[in-house]
Structures are given as C-alpha cells and as structure tokens.
Amino acid sequence: MSWSIFKQEMLSKMENSSFKSTDEFADFFTQKYDQCMKRGLDLVTGNTVIKGNTELMRSTVLYALEVGKNSKTETFYNQSIALLGKGAVMYWTGAELGKIPPAIPAPGTILNLSVISNTVTNPGVWPEAPIPVIPTKSNNPYLDAFIIQSTIHLTTISGFCNTISQYPPIAPPGPAFLPFTGFNIPPSKGQENFLEQIEQELEEGQDPIVQDDTPRVESKELDDFEKASNKKINKGSVIKRKVEVDAGSFNPAQSSEQIVSNDASDDNQPPPKIYGKIGGFAPPRPPNLSGKNGFLDIGQLVAIERGCSRYGGNYLLHPQAAEQYFKLKEVARKNGFNWTISSAYRSVDHQLSLKSAAANNAEKLKTIATPGSSPHGWAIAIDFGELNRQVGGSGNAAVNRTGRETSKLYRFLSNVAPQFGWYNPYRLADGIRTDEIWHWEYWGFYT
Image (tube, rainbow, N blue to C red):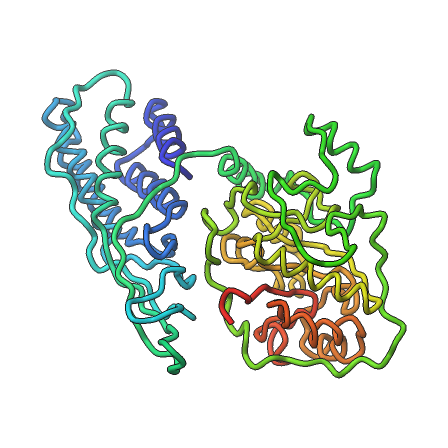
C-alpha cells in the first residue's frame, strides 16, 4: 500500500461516514497506516517493517478523537493532525524491521552474513510547524496534510541493525552494528497496484489472476502471449541488455524448441559434493542492483532462457549471475548435459501466486518462500525442472538425499557449478530440514 492507496481508502471511509464509533476509526486508521508502512523500506538496510507498535498508536489516535469529538474548528483540525502524528511516532516506538542482511557492510566489516535484530531505537520527531488546514466538506486537505508531515517524520526515525558480519581479511565472522536513519514509502506503481489486486482476490477466496512458472512455453502459447500483451518479442533479446560470453558456439538465447532435457549417458560422474556451508542463510541484496526484493526493474536484468509465462516470455537473472550461468551451460553442453529452467527471477506478485496455489499442499508450501524474501526476488536463483521432477517437487530431506545420489545431472552440477559461483545452497542440501535439489543460487558475489 502506497500513500495514495492509504489516502484513497481513508477518504472513502471518511466521506461515506461509515464509522460507527471512535474506536472503529482508530482501528481502521491504525490498520491502514500499518499496511502502508509495511510497503516501505529503510534507507540503509533496505528492510521493511515487520512489527510496529500498533497498540500504542491506536490508543493515541483514540485520544486524539476524544479530544475533538464535538469540534470542527480550524484549531481542532490542526491540533488533531498533530495528535495523529503522535500516534505515528508511537507506532515506531520499538518497531522491528526485517532481517534481510543489508548490502552495505557494517562499519569495520566487508560483508553482512545474517541479521540478529533490526530495531528502531529513535521513533523520530513529528514536524513542529503544522500545515494549516481549513475545515471543508472534503477530507482531502486533512489527509494531504497528514501524509506530508508523515513523510517528513519518517526521515527522522533511526535505529541499529545488529548483524553477524565478515571481518577483513580472513578473520572469523562476528557481531557488528549498522546504524540506519530514515524510512521511505515508494509511490504507487503498476506492479504494486497489481499486488493489491491479487491480495484482495485471495482474501475474497478467488483464484489468483496470475499463473505459475511453466517448464516451457510452446510457440503457439508464446504467440498468444504476444497478442495479449500487444508486444512483439524479439526472440533471443535481453530486455535492452546483452552479455558477451566467451562460450564457444553456445547461444544462450536459443529457443525452447532447441533445448532438450536429458541426462548424460556417461555414468562415470563423481559423487555429489556440498561445499561447506555456503548458502547456509538466504543471500543478501546483490551488488549493482536497485530496487526491493521482488520489485526489481526488469530492464536491469538479463534473459537466460525462453519459456517463462511472464517477463516478456523470458527467464531473467542478475547480469553477473547470467554471465556465469551461460559459461556453466556451455561446459554442461560439452559434457552431454542439457536442462530446462522452470523458474528464475520472481516478482512479489509472482511469489504470492505460488503461495496461493500451494495453500492446500502443506508439503509444497514449505518449499515456497514468503513474498519479498525469496532469493528469486533478487534474480540470483534458478530452478532446474529435471531435478524438481526427480523428487516430485518434495522438500523431504530423505527424498532429496536419494535424488542427489542418483541424479547424474545433480552430481555433475554439484561438482562443476561452484566453479561458476552457482550452488545448491547448504540450507537446502544439508539432509536435515527442507531440502530442494532443484534450487540453485549464485554466490559468486560473496564467496
């Protein structure tokens, strides 16, 4: 929810006079403010709000309403905005932010490995100079004044992100603190409106309006997609980008008809290999990439394969991850291996649709990350269709252990892919919890 959606929903409720009591207004106002904050991110660590102090905010908003319950004067309008502002300050008192490791290293370190806590220690200051509001029949000026002052207030909140970080040059990881100041609510965009629509449909029990990744989009389906979107896809294009790779005659943008799923006939593959504990935690924000997890501008990504039901029919990756993928693909081809990619970059609405589709399948649901936290949202993860089918999409550790041992493709990848920065991450290959032999991540930025 952006500020514009916050205003729209508040305005609709206020102008229809549908509040039956001050308690109901306080509940609604607090809820919408909370939803709005959970769509923003702090300006240093790039995390959003996990838990705000809604109880304290609600009680403060309720007090503001009681003070001016019978007053409609200009003085009351301006005082009540200041009182609502105090409610916003209360919301940030002890607020907790997300735990995605920040891309900016904590002072004295070179890489944040994980986050222990991320807490607001200073809830900020509400602007002292009020914006004069004259009572009118419309609540537009009232809400506009609150939003303007809220935006200013958000620049004053601050706190500390408590991390486990890597110290130079080869010192063992240890605790560190990264201070942050400021929080921002991005403006409403088409993708965010799309997400709001999906969430509303899910709440109403309707089927989501998006589809899961498909292993391949055949030529007729691709033509239908082009007609529906009124866009002609330049097959083999890279969304205004191109990566030059010295990979012999391999064409990374080959059509889906040229990709043949097979396992090399040579059974002299070494046993599967796990490289220490690389990927023991979700990867942090990759470098040289702007935007939030799942809200990336696809213009900065690179197409690695055709066949996705989204993103112009392409599977997309971070440029560096794509470059190394192409090199791995060429080595695999020379060794007799081909595969089908079934997922790469996923937007938040895409991830949300996967969660919805698996809502009645507890086993599959365990293998789908919360929207906004998936490595797919950073465009540095891919899923191999053949490996997913090898274990029937199961996250069961024992089933995946058997898959690692019996799949020639997995054995090849586990020994060769790390040379190009690609790993089946340790947390999904440790044979203990949920495992996914099909999910691979690019760790070349960090290792």
